[in-house]
Image 1: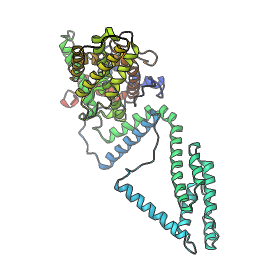
Image 2 (image 1 turned 60 degrees about the vertical axis):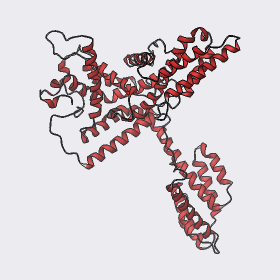
Image 3 (image 1 turned 90 degrees about the horizontal axis):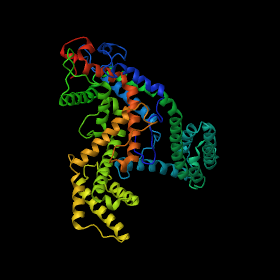
Image 4 (image 1 turned 90 degrees about the vertical axis):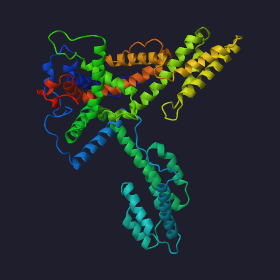
Length: 505
């Protein structure tokens, strides 16, 4: 969901109700933690082909099945976008101004209208094109024109094209949305009949788009109510047609399983006597850690999980905004550590320094962005702003050594292993992890860790948008995740077999 700094979207807004959210809890009930028995992982409570792989030999997928899966994905993506994006609307395609396609379209359309103009200016006038045009107009505005009558009038030289055009405009004015009133007024003021007919078609296209967007807005509440079942059903169809449709998702979750196993081994914890040599992992923790990885994802190099493809663009925008907020928090922490005695009690200065940082860091996720150079510029500008404030209060400015030290520390956070950058990153991860652990984050946000006060408002907004995506995704794909976790955590019990095919790849 695109970041909107002026509005906090908390979990549950424009999402399925709390009763819907219980479905994920039901599908993952046996995965809550290790109070449950392993036997629960062998049940067939979730959808039948939801497991990431089957013990039976792979079958050949036909071209029609591939195309069917693609259509299902396209439909699922469209419905998902309409349901979760309040700003979604159809727009008229606009070709690039100087493109070949744009030039060809312009030439062809101009040729058509030139022919119409020459026929109407002929002596006597020719009405073939005008009658065809009238037939098209009749179809587009509810068949209010009698083409046979128009043809008879043309044969007797009595057709009133201007009168017909005025009637069409009047009818359009009754049918169009208020937003098109200005367009209708412009049509009435157009004197050239050919240009008038051209603009009538343009406005009719806009009216068609208005109607489509009105229907989308009308259906959005229905889509939101039915979204969980619809997406789950469509994805099940995709999975049946394309058995490998969960491979990337399985790999995504397996990375978290491996990281958790490594973390357990590093802490020196060992399984209890008489149990499996494999440490017990919380499935809920594994899945939440998988979601946290999405905000550190390399969208240029890594393949995205299939179950999150409908939200990939939203998550990428959140990741880009989060990267910017991390740097701003680092800069603020350095400034407070070095110049706290000066900036304390001057909130307007702190706000100004934050705005300077935010402006200069815009676009930092682009490949051409030179973070080190920008950080150096932020340091120089910060020194200038602080000195300006000091001068206004009749105080001595920062000496050269302090300024050089500040600029140097700013530039050093360009490295990902910088201690301050690592500290801020861990605290942000802690906050987001706490957010995912709350049953109703929209009712009570977790406390903000120290050092993040400067980005608190933005981080809370971003966190709620992120939690919206995660919670809806859990509701839709809970049964699929449950089967994947059964296989990764209890491979043998998941299929009842001990051969290699039963374990995760």
